[in-house]
Length: 134
Image 1 (tube, rainbow, N blue to C red):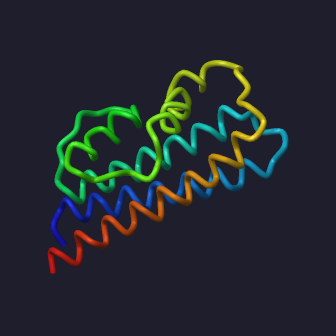
Image 2: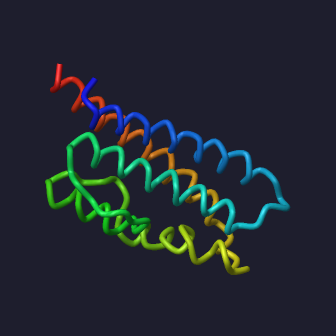
């Protein structure tokens, strides 16, 4: 398998780990929302990066979900989440890990839907590239 596709599948596996952590942590009432949000942000970041790897798009080291989405859209690849949704998750990458900020009440449930949506989309995008490469 070409290295760019190996990297895409690795990113998807890592996203799956963060989704699993998100699912476990969101069920525990004593876990701070910043920790739960961190895993959500990470899963979405890795899912977006998986698609970038699959399409062999070079990108700088970043946690900015909006920037990653922009790079995809520049190549006519439309992610399933709006920039507004992605922007809400960006602070969890770094800033919220060092603050005691609380998220809005429905944040976790809404984010769970986003995670499933983007992970399913990213998996399909990578599979399309794999089929084209065969």
